Length: 318
Image 1 (tube, rainbow, N blue to C red):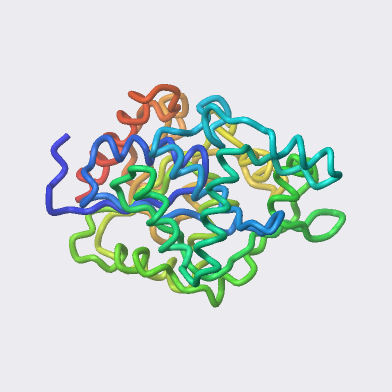
Image 2: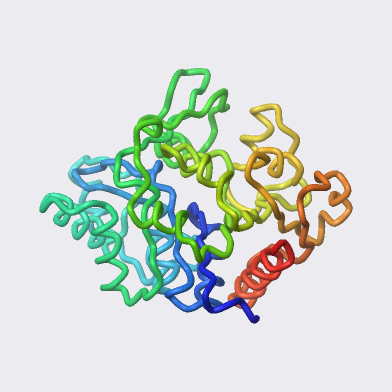
């Protein structure tokens, strides 16, 4: 893979699916050429701790200490705290393993000292041995809420407590209109050596939209010279991970790659389409350069191969 040494890559990332591609990119690009902006609209306060699910999933994945069966949480986890909390009658609907709790205690302590989420994340990455730059989309609070038939729900109550069962009628990102991009995020987008932006195959509506909703981000993406490419999060009419297909259906959207392309239409220049959906290529706008390949990331090699395909597509677009 001959990616130009002077060109930098910015990845926009949600949780499990995005983290897989982010890991592949770290195996292909050195730290000085790759930065990863992560959704923080899932973040919430729980049991007095600040939980950052997507940031933690990405950092655990890049540090290779994640639970590879679930994709979230830490490997070799124990649950003594949750068991003791249950005995005391405390809230246990959001499962926090003992090792995971250490992360949240560290974050809470540093936030209480006045550090920003960006600074805390940088410290966590350093302590976990992550050389690549990982940062939140914003240091300001943004909260994803979904409107169901029973009213508005905080994202984690919908996603974890109610296991995505309620029908979604609308999605909003509270605070996004005034939230400023984190310093590293804004700097990455304005870097004159930016070679491409890669939108990881995270949920477009719950993981990527909040990133795009941060003040000025969508406009910046339409203005940059570098190609912006997205990896399809749907294969064969199904979501690879999570409730993407369910949400698309509930919002009366076709569960197709073209729907995803249309969702990013104002700034997208390239799209990575799974081989199973090759026949869908002629439905995509002629203005979009398409790369057809395997996008299902089961092994580490799959992650690396997809990362290379993304960079090849960016080079094709130029």
